[in-house]
Length: 381
Ligand SMILES: Cc1cc2nc3c(=O)[nH]c(=O)nc-3n(C[C@H](O)[C@H](O)[C@H](O)COP(=O)(O)OP(=O)(O)OC[C@H]3O[C@@H](n4cnc5c(N)ncnc54)[C@H](O)[C@@H]3O)c2cc1C
Image 1: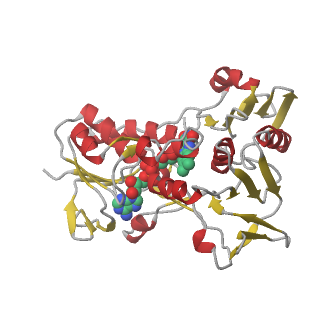
Image 2 (image 1 turned 60 degrees about the vertical axis):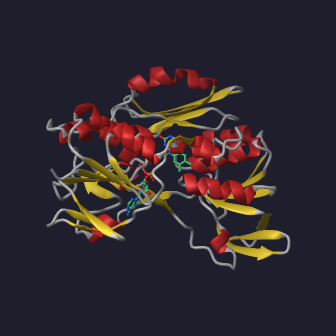
């Protein structure tokens, strides 16, 4: 029997495999991954420094343990280079595998800013456990860390590294942290609350150059000013990995395009997680991939099941300012109603009839999370 092949051993690939195994213990399962195939929780990468966690301690199961748990074959350090859809084969250096069904769980690449300068190659990003290990080694014995991007991941790293004793600067073209997720009044408050751990913010500018000098790395901004740092971490966003799918002639847009059954334009190939654009939505978070993995497992086991997404607030891991955001759908019509007090912020995005479409809560207002989540519309009904 030809196996189900899963490309990728991140949370999407492994969760899909686990969910499938709950329903089917016989069909051969092969997972293929560029990386070492160790299981870890990626969200922990941005709050592990202050807890002193190394890459090894974040790994909760090796590839061999996962293979045994899943009753699967796992090919590690194996990069898939091509898909032959007619023959139903994937190709990699030194071999190929046939598949009955193929699941693309390929993740996303960090976006690189178009920087100039002689030290651009030294700019790091942390998008997987190997990056985390490299970053930890690089900052050992250093002091000044500049983070490009004050979005969710940039703020989490900033809080974590500042709490671990580093001197942290954050650079963002927006006027406040989490620029795309919270309204400005709230963002200004967040800037102050997160600032209590000692973050040096640079808003309204973008980095254009990174050069090595005798005093460290000089980051030049578009307004002519500059900042010195020992290490530069880029956290300006992710781009779904679509190249493999595109080369195989699958429909891609922002992500690998799928319907609500996670099926791509080829009914034998599915996509899940950060690489996928499901029913028009690119949602690079854990909750959507969990929902998708559950329904995909049912579909693969013979019960055709569409994915639906409930409201899925995201907890921002910034202990200096506990925060949860449920941004309104893109283009939603409405306005923010913001209540600020000394201990928190409660920002509600409502339409003209007063229906709740999104929220952002900080500090004591976090206590309202559950009640407000119940009032939100589903992300995909
Ligand atoms: C620092 C950080 C913090 C985060 N915090 C949160 C959070 O608090 N809450 C939340 O909901 N989400 C968070 N996220 C997002 C969440 O972690 C991701 O949405 C999720 O882990 C994506 O899983 P994935 O399996 O789709 O991708 P990945 O984990 O990137 O896995 C992709 C897999 O594909 C493999 N691969 C890629 N190309 C090939 C190829 N050609 N051949 C073979 N294998 C290939 C890779 O080796 C890897 O195994 C965070 C992300 C980051 C980076």
